[in-house]
Image 1: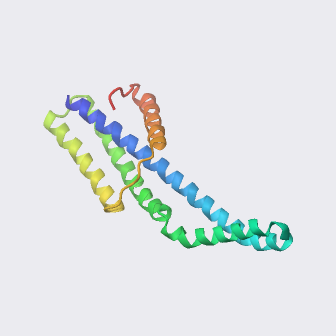
Image 2: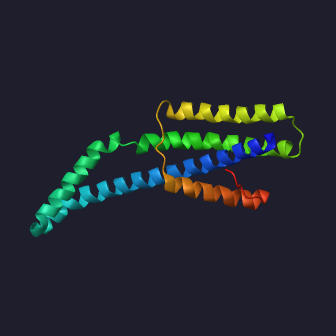
Length: 169
């Protein structure tokens, strides 16, 4: 029973690590596209407006939109979230390596049930400490598409390295 609980903890840790990495990638992409849009619109809008007077309304909208995005960009969570996610992902990666290393002792029956229980809760404490350190009281909105991708990536990982499928996670 305790081996199974530890396995589920290990599985969930890997899912969360994959999810954080995917969320970080998504946030970086959004931030990058916003920056690209701002750079292109600010450098080409005025020139485009001057060249194509017939589309002045379109160019005025693009300029106005870029100004609005430029003002609210610092209020959007992407920059702050990227820094937090990067820190959490790094720490979760370290916890994951530690947990996988301990899996050998757990799976081979080298630990008592109490030791496995304590080890599992030690991992949970490390995760919670990392989340509080980097997110504080903020939360990370759930993205079901990214979560599904994270679970699939985790299944592939465990099938490749442990030749098992997680049926109950």
